[in-house]
Structures are given as structure tokens and as C-alpha cells.
Image 1 (cartoon, rainbow, N blue to C red):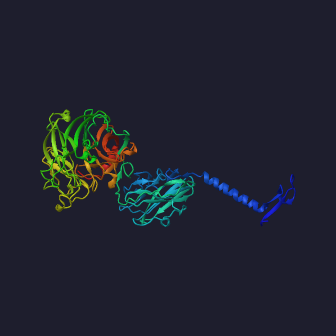
Image 2 (spheres, one colour):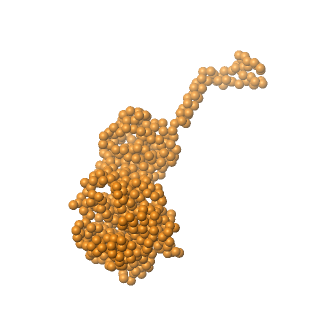
Image 3 (cartoon, helix red, strand yellow):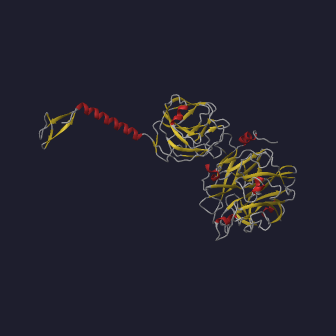
Amino acid sequence: MPEGTSTFTAAAGGSGATGNHETAGKSFPLPNPENCMKKIGLFLTLVIAGGAWASAPQTLPGTASTPAAYTMLSPGFRNFDAVEYGNPYSGNFRSILHIAPEIRGLKGVRLPVDEKGNMQATTLTLRFTRPVKLLVGLAAAPGQATDAAMLQHLDFHKGKPVADMVMLNALSVTELPAMDVYAVNYPSGQQQITVPAAPGFHVAILGAVPANQRIVMRDAEIKDETDYEAFYIEGFAEGPQVFSVIGGPNEPVVEEGMPGTEGIQGGFEGGCIVRVGDTYHMFPTERAGEIGKPANYDRVKTRIGHWTSTDAVHWTRRSTIVQATGVYALVHEDNPMNDRRSAIWSYMPIFSKEKNRWYGHYLAYTTDREISPNHSFGRIWRCESTVEGIEGIGGPYRDVTVVMEPGLDSQWWEGRQGVASFFPYQVGEGEWLGFFSGAYPFMNKGDYPLKSGKGWFVGLAGSDKLEGPWTRLPDTVNPTTSIHPWFVENPIVSRLPNGLYIAVFDGGPSYLKLPNQIAYTLSKDGYRWSRARYIPIDVKVAKWWDTMRTPLCLIPEGDDVYTIVYAAIKNSRRYHPMGMVRVKLDREALETVAAGLEGR
């Protein structure tokens, strides 16, 4: 008989005090009563614990956690949303690029950093109404590994950090390695966390979840973004929000198969829209291409169309303003042997009050089959409507002259593609400026014509009248890198109600580590321009695109509402449609921003 057991014996058909339980001649040992009670207690403990564990909330991989509310007691601190574009730091514009669903949607607290982006010493005081796990993101210095030992450099006061990681590579922030997430258990009540100055790594307070919330550990596989520059995302970055997104159609407004799109193989890219009376006039670059030819030819055989609308949503094609030849170059240099009107782009209409007629400025390229970029040596043509008056915007137009072109006065940053766009605007009586652009810069004369770098730049040209002649401003002014150090494309200038100049432009695609949003810049005098700010329209418009391209306008609708029509790309499609969104201007925020601008 095994140790620790006793026997109970029962006769067939009855019971007795013998040591065996017999049924049909068989006997069974029974547990010792004392040990039995111990094991029953252990069993009940496991059942209760298992029941509690099973009833505890659990965040499964790829699903959102339940946030726990808290009150921020430290003055001067601000919350941020732990979502894409969220800004975890006070003092710079670093933004969240990607974030695991388990962390997304929590309410974080911005921690202060210095002008170099290093953590500043700070103590944060919060009040919790229930026990919580405070989720803390840690990003080691580039080239180093994140581990729980970093938590020892932080003072959690009554909080108890959990050594086991909650999630690996859970979010990416511009200019930083991917962040791992750890939890700190805090009781209810007033609690603190202290971060020392420059600890050698970055800390982000991402939000709180209930103490019994269990997040299944996994590697979210979000990549480092140390080489992704920080940028100002409107409504997410710290500071006044000048434009908020009202909304717009959740699908393109000019799409393949709609009336007027016949003969356009590749959709649209860039151009300009103006409103005359109640009618919007759109002059997009139509990537016409040719049936039977590959998609890259859509960018060569282009044309400028004229479309109209009364609501910026439903469009009717009226005519073709300019048509490219689609003929490739014979030689790689800028040579008269080449067809210099092979591709046509970026039509910008400007009304001349003095001449009482519309002028159109557009770009004509040489195209090369073998050299990148295949669009080279751009020339800006000016054409004029043959119909006088403001109603003559539809033309027809006649070419007048080339107003800017490559030459001995070209600047290195204009590169092989320059001059790549042109938009003139008046800054005073008898004083005009024009944004002109270049790309694929030459670093010196020896780089011409085949060796070019990367970068899309704009500079300023000046004239005493719209007709020109136009003169490049000196290289002490150009290129205008105050907007962005190396990417500004196709700016369109207008004026805001307080007199500020504003230019909307293509902010650049994500594959170049750029924000992939519509961008704008402000100026008091038209010469000095502010750092770019980016408008995330996908907070209110379903993101039907992969790559945001060029805004064609910023048209006032009254009550500080503005219309933007934009070209965008779905990477899986050859056809590039057009979309529309409306935004709202906050005049008080605008004045706050204006106070910090330089200029006359």
C-alpha cells in the first residue's frame, strides 16, 4: 500500500469499517484525509487562479488594448495620441511613423527634449483611479540593443517595472531606432516617473492599460527610422494648428473611365486650378501616353487639358491647351538636335490685369531613353489666351516666348532636370517673384551632363513685370532650403486673409523618407519662407492612394474654408487619379505662427 494512504473496506451491497473499498471483489486505496484536504485546497487555488486568468482582459496580437484613464497633474505637459503622426516629444517634431495595433490609440504624454533631441530631466506626476500598467517605449542609441537594464536609469517611485518586455519593435519614430515597450505597474492614486537628462536612450510615455490587461508578447517587426527626418504634421506636432481637415470624397473625383478621360493611359500629375466666378478651371498634366506602349511612355507623351467644374467634384473636359510630341532625344546633352518639347508639364495660369488676358506658364522637357532622369533640360514657356478678359481663361492660347531655360546663369542645384517648374507672383508694385525648380543637381561643372545627384529644389527669380525678363536671384538666396533642405516640388502661391503668402506643394513620397502629404509654407514678404508643414488629409478622407502627389490649388470658399484638388498614385495601378479635400483655416493659430516669421 502506498505511503500516506488508508483503506476503507465495504462488503458487497453494504458498508463497513474495513480498510478497503470492495466492489465485485476489488479493493481501492483512498487518500489520507489530511493530504486529501491539502490537495483539494491546491486544486481549488489553481481553479480560482485559472478562472481569474481566463477572465482577465487579454490583448491578442494585432488587436487594440483597452486604455486606462488618468489625470495629468504636472503643469506644462501635454498629451499626444499614440497613433501614426503622433508627436511623443515636446521640443521637436519627431513623429510616429508606424505603431503596433496593441499600442495604437492609447493616450501618451509628451516628454521634453532639448534642441538636439536629447531627453531633458523631468518628473511627471499622474493620478490613476485604478491600478494600471504604464507602457513605456525605449529606443537605444543607434547600433545598441534595448534591454530592461535601461529601466534602472529611470525612477518610477512607487511603480514597479516589469523586467519582461511587453512588445519588441512596437513602434517607429522619425530619426530614432524602433522602440520596444515595457510595462510599469502602478497602484491607484498620485504617482510619479522621473527621467534623467540625456540618459543615452529615448523614453516615450505611450499610455496606460488596466493592471490585469495582458498583452501577448510578440515582435511587431517595425523597422528603425533613424534616417527618416522629423517633420511638422499639422494637428499632431506640438504647436498651433493652422489648417484642420474638414473632409472630402473618399474616392477620386477624376478617375479612369469617366467622361473626358478617353485617350489618357496614365491619369494625371500636377498642374493648377483657378476659379473664375462660380467655375473651377483645372489645367492638369494628362499622362496621355499611347495605346500599346509601356507605362513609362505616359510620362513622355503628355498634354495639358482644360477641365471645368462648379463643385470641384464633378468635372468636364473642355479642350487640350498644349500637346507634347513624345519624341525622345538623339543625344544626351542639351542640343538643338533634340526635340525640346518632348514632354509637357506643370501648366500655371496667371491673369495679367495690365494686358487684360490670361498667361499660361508651362514646362517643356527633352526626354532621354537611357539617362536618369529621363526628363531633362526643362524650359518654361509663356503662352497667352487669344481671348481678352477674365472669361478668356479657356483660350485658345498661342505660344509667345521662353521665359526661363538652362544657360550660363543656371545654378548647380537646378541639375539635369531644371528648369522644372515656374510659378510667378506679385510682391509689390512693379515687383514680381517666381518660384522655379530643379532636380538631380550637378555638384560642379564637371558633372554635366551625365553625373547628377538626388534632390528636388526651388529657388526664386525676379522681374519688374510679369512678362519678364526674369533673372535668377543669387546663390546666396537660392535654393530656398528653409522650406525643406532637399525636397520642394511644384509650389503654387496665393495670399491668406491676413496678407501672408502661402505656397502649397508636393511634400514628397514615403519611399524617399518624406511625409507623403500635401505641404505648405508661409511668408511675410514672398522672399523668406517658413519650414514646411504637412496636412494629413487621411485623418478625415479614406486613403485610396499610396503616394500623395501634387496639390493643384488652395481656393477660398468663404468662412475660412479652402478647397484642395490633388493628384495621387495607387502603386498597383497605371492610372493616377485626382482627389479633392476641404480644409479649415484657424485665423488665431495663423497669427501665432505669423508672429514667428521673418520678413518685412
